[in-house]
Image 1: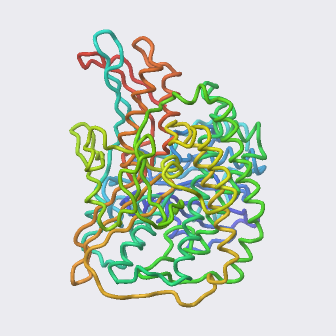
Image 2: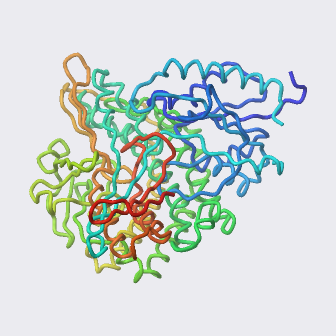
Image 3: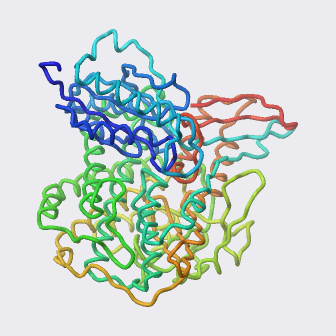
Length: 153
Length: 477
C-alpha cells in the first residue's frame, strides 16, 4: 500500500433504472464496500454544476460512467477540462464539471474518466446485462489496485 | 494538472440521454415550408411499473429523470394518496411535501438559469459559443457563477432534508410522509436562507433587466399567441403543489377553470402524429388545430390571479404590466417568469422553515381504498400528470404519464418554425441559425431525460431538406 494516501473521490453516475446505464452507480456501490483508505464514493443519476464544489476538495477525482462504445471491459483516461453550452439542463459533461471546479473553486485535482462498457440501454429495468456485469467486476479490480497503489501518474 | 494531461483529448463517456433533432423542409422557392422538432419519446416506463405494488411507485418513478425526480415522486405520491383514501394530508405531511417541492423548484430553476441561460443573457445570443457558456460566465462573472452553484446546492439540501436523501428519496409515501423536519435540519437550512433570498432577487433582476432592455428584439423571437394551462389554487393564487386545472386563451379568457384533477381526460386529449413518437396534447373542446397550449413558468404566471408571497407578487405585477395585464406570449419571457418563481420558491421555503408544523409527528392518513387515481403537480417545466389503476392485489395495472415537455410539444415546434422562418437565409444551416434554434428550444427547458432516451452523446442536430426531400445540409452541436 502507498504510504502517502491520496484523497480520492470516485463519482459513479448513470440511471440504475436503465439497465447498463447503471454501471457508474454500480461501480460506486462496489467500491464503497471495499472501504478503501482516503476514498470518498458518491453517485448520482447525472453530473450537475454543484458537483464542482465537491470535486475541488480532492487530489484525485474519478468520474465513472457507462459507455456505449469504449474498449472492453473499460477505459481509464485523464480528463481535460472543457467549456460547453448545452441546450438542455439535463446534461453536464465531466469536463465541464472539472472546468467549473478549477475556475470557481481553485480545484487542483487530477481528474480521470472511467468508461465501463455497457450493451443494453434502451429499456427500463434495474439489472445489468451479463457482459456488463463482467466488465464491472474487471473494473472494480482495476480501481482497487489503482487506489491502493496510489499510482495516478 | 500537468501540460501532458491537458493535451489529451478525451471524448466524453457516452450518456444515455435524450437528443433533439430539428428538420426544416423548404418549398420550391427555398422558403421554409415546415420545421419540426423531433423528440424520441420513450414510453416504456408505463410498462415497467405495471405489476409493481402501488406503494413502490413514488420511489420507482424517480428513475425517470435525474433533474426532476422530486416532481415525479410527488405526482405519484399524490395519486397514491387517493388510492389509499388519504388525499387530505395532515398539516405536517403537506408542508413537508411542499418544502421538498419548493426546494426542487429552487434548484431546478437556478440550474437552468445559471448553467444555460445566463451565458445568452450576459454575452448575447450571437456571441461566440467558445465564450458563451457557463465557463465563460465563471471567468467573467465568477461571483454570479458561484451563486448559481450554491443556489442549486441549497435546493438539493432542502430535498435531502425532506426526502431523506439527495437522490431516490423516500419522503412522500401514500397518504403522507415518512419523516418530519428535525430542529437540526431546520437550523442548517435557515443558516443560509437570507443569502439565498438575496441571490434569488439578484437573478430575477438580471432576467428582468435583460428582457426589458431587449424587448424589441425578444418580443418576436420564436413567439406566437397561444393558450396557457396550469393548476391553480381555489382563490386563484399560483400554487405549484396542488389545485384545479385552469386554461386560458391568448387574451386571458378562461377556457376551463378549477377542473378536478381526476377528470382531466374530460378536458385534455393526446394526439398521435405519424412523424413524432411524442404525443401532442390538446384541449378537447377546441380541437387539435387550436387547442394546444403552453405550460411552465410563463403559463403559470399568465394563468394565476396573484402570487401569495410579497416579493414574487410585486415581480409578477411588473411582468404583467409589460403586456398591459394580458397574457404574455413572448417565448423568451419564460426566463423572467422562471426567476419570479425562483424568488417565490425561496420565499415559501423561508415561511415553511419557520412553521412549527414541520416538527409534527402526525405523518400519515388513510381512508377508503380506491382503484383509480390521478395526481397532478406543477413541475419546474410545467404541468405533470400521473394516472394509475391499481387492482385488488395492490398491483399497478395501468399507468399514463403526461410530462411537461409533452404538453409543450406543439409550442416548441411552433417556436422552431418561427425561428427557422425568421433566420434561415439561403440553403445552408449557419451557426447563427443553429444558435437561434437552440435558444428558442432552451426557453422551454425540455426535459429530455424523461421524455426521451437515446444512445450516445446528446446533440442538437438541425437538418435542411429541399422540396423533394433531399438533404441539403446537416449540422450538430
